[in-house]
Image 1 (tube, rainbow, N blue to C red):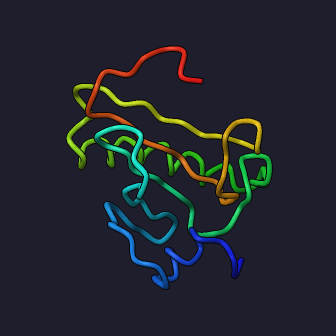
Image 2: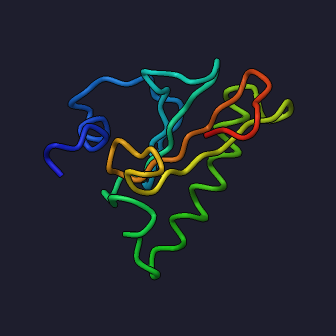
Image 3: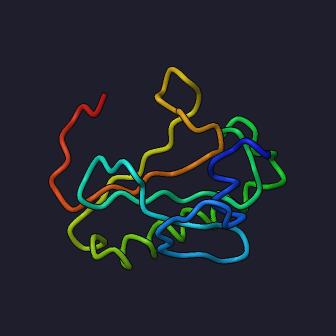
Amino acid sequence: MKDCIFCKIIQKDIPARIVYEDDLIIAFDDINPQAPIHTLIIPKVHYTSLNDIPLERLDLLGHIMDKIREVAAIKGIAETGYRTVLNTGGDSGQDVFHIHFHVLGGRRMTWPPG
């Protein structure tokens, strides 16, 4: 999608602090961090939200889950703990409509989050 900021990051049209990248996903630090560590993981194919990933692409979600663990290790929070967040739709707080997973850590998280 030509107007999607995350698609522009994937295309390297907008700079980002990339933490991890492979042929399916890219992970980069959030420009408005909500915790000392705040990294976003997105698929390189544009899907608006979880609701838009076709059943035949559920393997992509498994890949992302595996890479969340790897990103947490890269960022040094795998052992101390981290929170993974996926917002779906406007009421959830999703403000960029390209599916993305937040990996947050570096401090004790509180509950409830919202």
